[in-house]
Amino acid sequence: MKKINKEIIAVVVMTVLVFAGITFSYMAHFKVDRPDLDDKLEKKKFLDQQLSTNKIEYYQLPKIQTNVVSSSNRMMHVEMTISIEPSKKVPTNHFKKFEAQILDLIISTVSQKSPEEMNTVSGKIIFTDQIKNGMNEITGGENVKRIFFSTFSVSIQ
Image 1 (cartoon, rainbow, N blue to C red):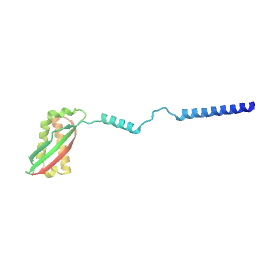
Image 2 (cartoon, helix red, strand yellow):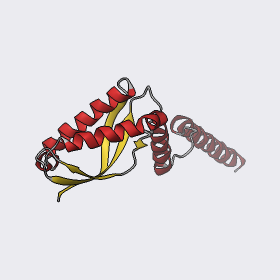
Image 3 (cartoon, rainbow, N blue to C red):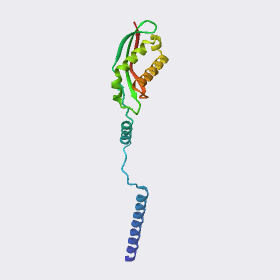
Image 4 (tube, rainbow, N blue to C red):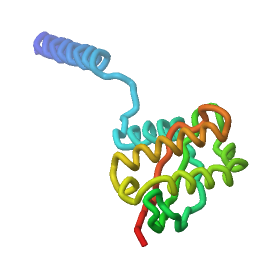
């Protein structure tokens, strides 16, 4: 009986050691010590970082609301709000000192257009290019990357 007990104890001890070895090997091989990642949190952090490094500041011109005589000798009421995206080499406030000249440029350019030109897509694209090029001339270089209209209304009176 003592011999059987010793054999049983030896088998149990060996079985426990084998299972312990297998468990240790499994944990060492498949277990990686890294924190659990919350995908939503990581995505938000990534997007916030991208937005903060790629943040674009615009210069907002005051709202333009005026009546002008168009190139077709008709009264035209024009209302628009323009935002300027500066090139990387100039700060946003650079346009403040040229604001009066820029507003004059816009009103002069509008008065050279007919209402029909101002109300077409191609006319608006040409108008946008003329304004952008004029702003670059006024500010002394390629300082305007793009301009955007947040409001744009032309009506014939």
